[in-house]
Length: 373
Image 1 (cartoon, helix red, strand yellow):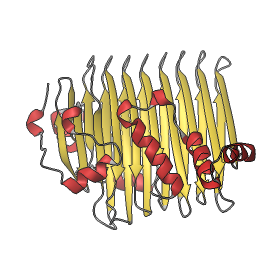
Image 2: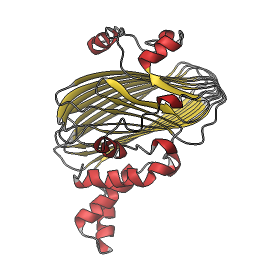
Image 3: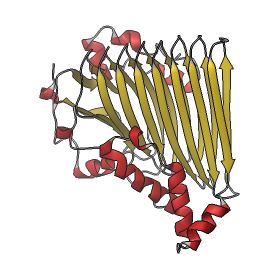
Image 4: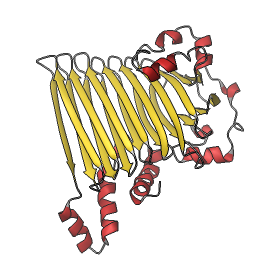
């Protein structure tokens, strides 16, 4: 099924498309499907291929009665005050719904974006994604504000269901305002034999970003995720992640790369082996460029089965003086040598990044280090 009747190519202005391209937006005709949420409404929701449906969460609730059973099924609305406020908006929820049909093999990426255009706005979003059994999809998502928006509050809830045997590769890029506050809640459930590879790229200055992520991995399913985060002076990033290997054969690898140039980063990660035959790894590496900044990395393991194999490693340090001296001896000045070291530290694994975004992510890393973002 396609919903090409919903195509609205004129819905975004040229300025809006320019803003979104900085976080991965591509020509909708080159994507399987596109959604764009602007302030409090879905501005674009279109699909060009069979096997994928995208629409506002309001439309999804009217079209499929099972969607109401998914909302808040992975996260409790009374978990804290912000979630309680979000749940009170259920009569008029804002967000996108993505449904990749069972067995669909998408050959082009599916993209979802959010823009907050009103200064001092408070934006709540609730997104639900369902990847049907045996489906195969690549997803690109991002969030951004125009340059004139410096302050505001964005709260997002993401509930993602990767069903049995499905495969999902995703990358998310965020570019918020320097005095904004963001609270994001992400919950994912992987069915038996499912595969998930995801990347988060968070480089631009922000006042405070708190991220709360939980993932449940089923039998013989695997989850590989990477996050790169940069904290300029005045930026505070707080990350709480919990990964649970729920059934035999579940596997996970989670890697966080953190660089502080005067800001603070707190990363608490918990990996739980809740079944025999499970295997997981946590990696948390930090690079402190200035004594004004601070990085706290706390990887924790909890084995609830004697046959769960869990491991972690963590490091936080300054730039290696020997590497710096080596590069400067080759003819680079100190600033350029430091840039290269940081860029190499933050680089994601190439095979985790979609081809269409690889050069863009590399440019963003260089720009963040130079203070250009």
